Length: 120
Image (cartoon, rainbow, N blue to C red; front, side, top):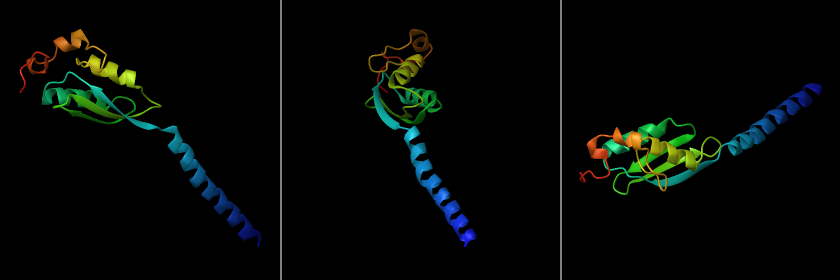
């Protein structure tokens, strides 16, 4: 009888840990999605922006639509902010909403990625 009580107590403790522990963990991470207008021009820009953000702390997914020039980013709000993401895009040489591009990074972009490049 004592063994059954111990087993039931152990089972209840494990069950509570699984139920409440999982809830607490999922509340620590809050994933949000942001859309940022960029000055991207081509698929090289797409590769550069997606690659530059892919390993950024907190970024879970990134995708640039070259036609609309909008980058969609899923990120963990505990690890990064929209402002930091915009700054990162700027440091890659592109405008990011109201954050202007970093001139030094822009100057290093290939000609096809410049704002005045013909559409291709």
